[in-house]
Image (cartoon, rainbow, N blue to C red; front, side, top):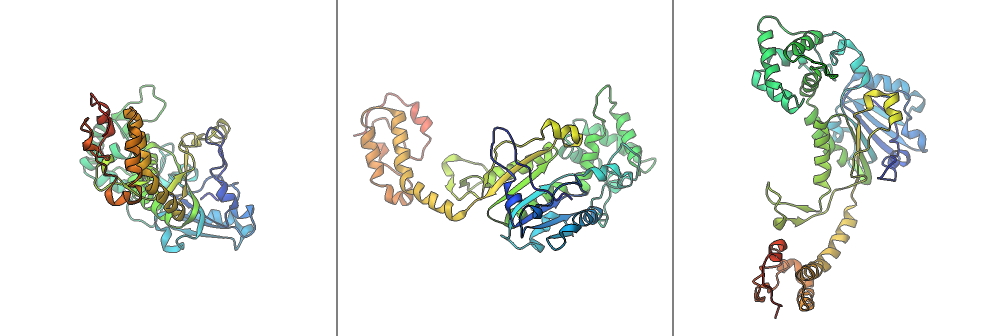
Length: 394
């Protein structure tokens, strides 16, 4: 578990993606498992009255964090819990900032008995919360070949998933696979390294760890829960370490940052309905560690920080009201400018005069009276541009 203020980024985004953690009175910190960077600063120390709420699935990490934060007694609360369950013990709308730090931690990789790494031989465990019954050994020895192929492809992005799954199935028929060294050697025999720096078992271990701990499921629920406990204007930051989880995080932000909703599974622009965005991006591009950070901690080389600000719904409603009032006239003006010709003024006036009841009439205009035969104002204007010859509106 890390208890730290988010450092302000430098680069094209400008500003401070983590200013909230330094100024906020109540900050939430969630970890998948294990702790990182033991000398990190407690955000409560940045401002009088600040309070930190932290959770981790790993009991050892919670205990270590409690010892590290002893000097701030009374200003923090730590629990052994999954951040997917934040709303169970954190009051909705009560936090100024939230930080989710995903993936496995350095202590977990360094302890062979936890079974997360193939660098040292240990039991094939991989549980972040040792109270759960399912282990990686159970999954490797009992999952079907089809299930192993799916896990390796979806969670590990392993291109040779089928070959490795069949090799594991053949090996487990004669002897049970119980250790990390045993599995790593088996994968390396089925997929020789041939001069590559990355160990062939890297993606397999990643997929098994994510499956054992249901990391993607916890992430999806945790993002929703973290947003629910934020105040309006509060910031949500997420640190990812590989592309599988980063795609989930980015898709979550893009969906909630939209100012419209769709009625079906396919996003058809003509069927979009205006809606209030729930979040706004603090920085569109992911923030990556600078070379000095990578030199100090090589395991941080793949880290990516993404940050959003919870939207103020009252402000969104005021903005949308202005868009409803002036939007149809602006749309008609732009369309007529694109079409060209002196009569665009008449067309703009026709739509502007009906802007007060634009929502009722859905922006309809008697475009069919045009000799060019253009459809109503909600149709695809790109198709209009290809129509010729064009004649002015009456």
